[in-house]
Length: 157
Image 1 (cartoon, rainbow, N blue to C red):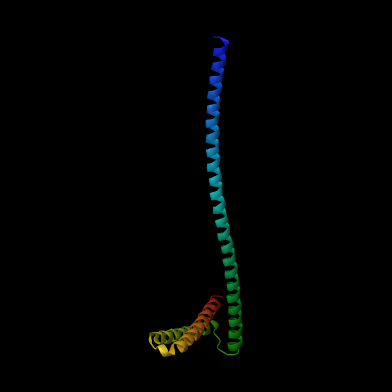
Image 2: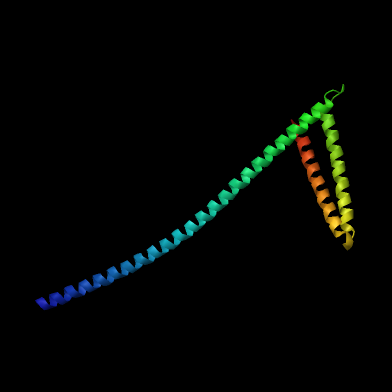
């Protein structure tokens, strides 16, 4: 082989190496692009999970506050109950609490029946009055349910 053929062979080898390296670079760029897209997706998922965690933290705090309020209401109900009935000779706290729960549940049923009867009356002229009555009844129902819950907790203690 003469020198010119050697140079041609070296040039051919060099071109093959360049083509191979170009192929490798293209593959690496595609891999890099895929990795970048995967990282973007993971970032979005992490941000989404972060938002969910923050919402759960806020809900947990709300539930804690609500639980504290229920405990305070229970304590107040217990204090009021004991101060009301402690002077009686035959004081049976559990029986008295059970009686109070029964009375409040009875009132709750009555209110719900009234609400159902009023809702079934299709009278358009009294719609504002009906809405106000519904609000008052709903408020009473919620108060009775909270009282029943507090008394049941008191009974369990």
